[in-house]
Length: 215
Ligand code: SAH
Image 1 (tube, rainbow, N blue to C red):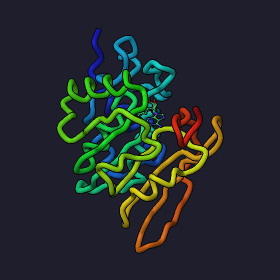
Image 2: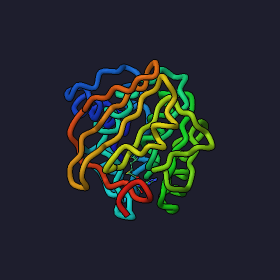
Image 3: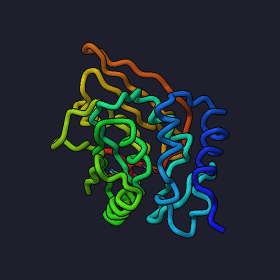
Image 4: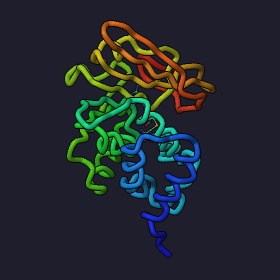
């Protein structure tokens, strides 16, 4: 029996997001709208709306829905922003960001996943304002910089300097920083020439690879 995906989505939003404090109405609406089942491997479709991260191949995962929602909420998007995501994975978070911002550039270091993200975004009808780039996003994507918001979906030992450089003032950047095992999700705010930051939550992401991460 094929689940009623709209019902699954509403349940996910109510039990996993609202109950844990996600309150931005635009984020909740986007999460009620994006078909997450189109972004997970076929054999995992039935668990597309479950709480934990799900394997997407190549040792990578689609983030927990709560993490995707929290990161999007921390960026305080209004609909006009030019956004950079580092770590497209299956493309789901990019689709969510695309629903909240003007456009999204997402960089993925595993070529097979970049291709998968492109296919998934297209099938879900979400490829109109989301561009998937092959490469190491630890150094950002200078070609389209600066960005009003940057979301890093893999954990780094430090905040890569290139990402701070490519962040507009005013702008928000969110990134898990810490060890390979444990991190804190940092939210960095650039405003009027100053940089402020806070910790949104403790978390565990897959490690950033490439020049700015762990190899
Ligand atoms: N945004 C995804 C999360 C994917 S997990 C979602 O919607 O759930 C993090 C992704 O970051 C993985 O696909 C991994 O291959 C990728 N990644 C790791 N290091 C990277 C780097 N330096 N540049 C670009 N992508 C990277």
